[in-house]
Image (cartoon, rainbow, N blue to C red; front, side, top):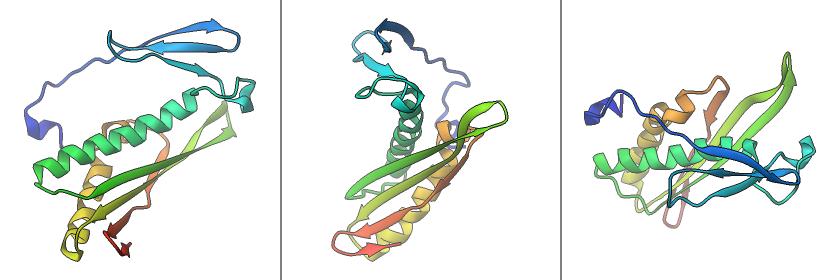
Length: 156
């Protein structure tokens, strides 16, 4: 496993504080020095438009975990991409017991300098998909649709 390979502790704890502030929105705070973020339920669930939502936090956690995990794996592999952008779409469906995320699709777009790096980059994206802590922690199906591009030509 990626984290174990770095001789890290076997347990970590992360926490935030959330509170209702006014109207239909609230605020989430983390450690001192970390910017707070206002949120609301999405308008689809009678929330206020223009705020981050728990659903967006959920897909953002998956996307940001993928990017940071790829960065770590690429660094250990001495792989230097030109760019990485990850689009994440989560699908919420009503089922037994209410609404839940039924599927999440990751669409990483990796840009590399040359053809030789394209294959290696795709392998590192696949390794990242298996290693991403947040994705591995979900009950929802998470799939990936990667694209690896040369600086001037698309691959994948």
